Image (cartoon, rainbow, N blue to C red):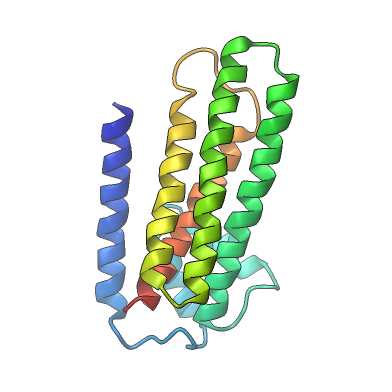
Length: 184
């Protein structure tokens, strides 16, 4: 069931990205100045547009170019993943429940891989391989989904991890939209 849900999520995301590509076409360059309309269009192409708008409109560090916006969101995803793995490591030490401890340990492995994917996304970005950024970000989403899937059934995860997973998923959806625009 997890495999089917994960695949339908990815299929939906790819459909959204296809529509974004069609909407933006080849006229937008990475150095293009980011306008309010562009931010709204980017965010409307993500699964959680209000989260996207909060991230891209409320932070004074958000750069003015599409290139800077991509770098900002990749860095934000990396920071989120790094902070989340620290949370997971503390949960492993604190929990007394052996099932939760095992699930957190497996999620820690997922986040190790996700951070590696984000490191590669940074390298791809520096090389202007925006398609590679897209591939690596999709890998991060797969790792998040795997971590989330570990908590289906009892006992439920009482920690902040589900919210952290969702936040990283939302940030990655922003990266996917922007990298797809830039790869045109």
